[in-house]
Image (cartoon, rainbow, N blue to C red; front, side, top):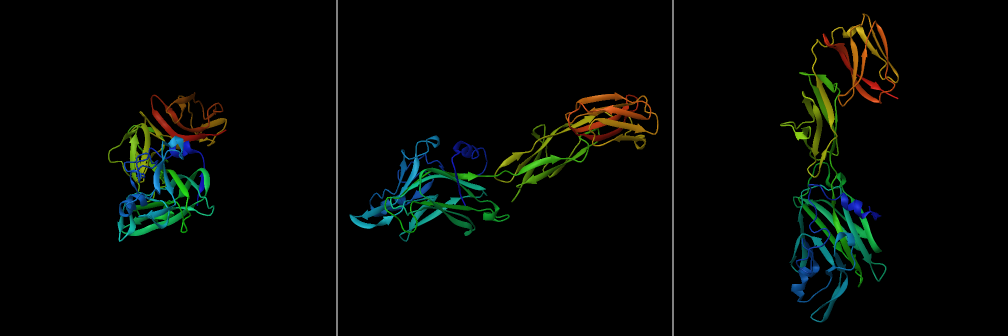
Length: 381
């Protein structure tokens, strides 16, 4: 259920730059009320006015903290509580995200409005207990329409140093399409049998969201004549529950291009921006090249053979008629002409061993007749 690790910088770096919702005050630096960090509720904030005393179960801690995360952590302590000088009971320190109230003398935590699907919960904690047998707990739940989509608890074991923990969430929590409307998240410094003196410090708690990602492909030639086109297709991963698409040309959005396919008629670099509602990802770009073709395409193409494909060292160009006056051009995926070879007779052997491995466009033609043959070929090593 959990993994402890210490790569704090890497962990926090994955946390920022997403558009989805995060927990308020997740490094506990802001304290308008000394009994609870901003955005959180505690037993102290609820019961201090009722008992007319200071419980001291929750406070900001400037000593036990992760220095890279700021000046304070949230300290929750299990302690003996006295009301009007009389022993009441041993109470754990409790902190929960969002608002809370005492209803019928019982604490009621309302959670936080939350309509996203995080993939991972991250937290940093330190826990010490004099008894040696106490445990702290994290309870988390996602609700929708008043019912729980998921509710579970995680035991936080004793650790004298801060431990960094990952809790996987994802589709197993929310189902295929459900989106929560409320987050319930609560920490307690003791479990069901609280031990006086147990102390839990929390200095980081938040979510990571996985991006839906796209890869742009085409089965059409990436170099084509002006007036022709290439159909681009996006393959999407991590697209659940809902994905929106935006095709880009040279980094700029294409109007009304919001489907999984796009028919390109112009040269440029094409990519797709994918959003799953929580995070946005832009695919690598695919370059398309257009060229002016003055002849009638594919005239006499049936009489010409170009082989082998793929090729390693020598490309053969043969025909049933004389190829004199024509030339073979090889163009790479960036639109650069890497080889031009005059053809003669009915059989030509062309050396391509010095060219880099990859996909190339070959054309056969001349200035007078334009492009007569065009196709792709793979060079392998």
